View 1 (cartoon, helix red, strand yellow):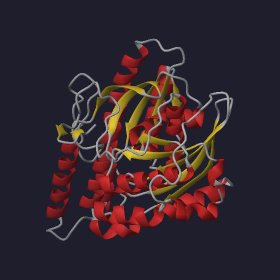
View 2: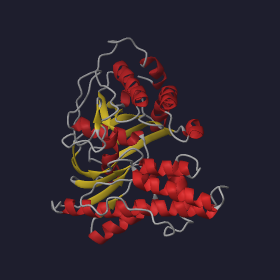
View 3: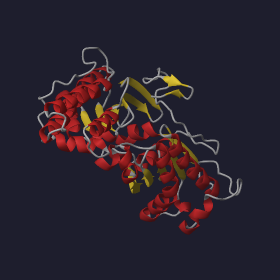
Length: 392
């Protein structure tokens, strides 16, 4: 099937081309199309697993939405969903063209089925269903968090079991990755995720979104010791974290700085020091909690001990550096994905789909979009539960 036929596929009537039973062989190359639309990045990628187990990214196209949400200080779900619907066919076509692969050269289609903003997730799932229906290719629903957690296997062929700190805009948890479908949570945030706290900090300081890179940039020039920001939950055992109180402490410090100027606003030095102090507090918490998670992990005496970091906040150079030093001191192999694979992308979804396919975990057209989908379903949700289930 030629690429020029792609647009027609997603509008075919039900039953036009039945999905064929999947057949995946660990000794044969596998090429998957991945689709990601869980938040504000519309992405499509083509990833190949070679017969020797090596992963290769043939293409990874990401269309961001920063300009669409800039005026609102954060992602607006309705705007994001509409943008996904408008761009999905374009990024899929671009990914196939860049990879030099036609639709009939694929072995399957992987798509983020949750967790995330439901409108965006639904857009991606429906696009993937249309392609699966039209081509007969197997459909594989992927947990977005599993995509992040399995990225070290794509980039570094990391063997199981390994420890990963998944730290992003909506999630923060330590996971013992025992297999592609088996994750054991050692701890996580009980409120805000670090990425969310970075974005809220940027908003409080009148910095543009996305906030994380802006706070990191200003923190390089600030004094991290000027403000006595708290390090939440360091006085309690375990690996759980909290960042909501840190954000509140920054708000109060900001207001005190503005009061010193008679209400005229923040001075440039104040903004730099607030960013530096906030980032230092987050780094301290993540480093200490990582040390505790590593102790638990090493107690199981893994044959090839390794610690990985994944997710958008993993792109922060200060945090990466602290975790690298910690692993060096403990004798662990440290893995941090390239910056373009830290943020949301479809390459990680395609790879996670390959891992699932090799386990025989393939979906059909009844695949549903899920706003919540914890990786470790055996443990109670860190952020509470509702009618839609545990959040994380």
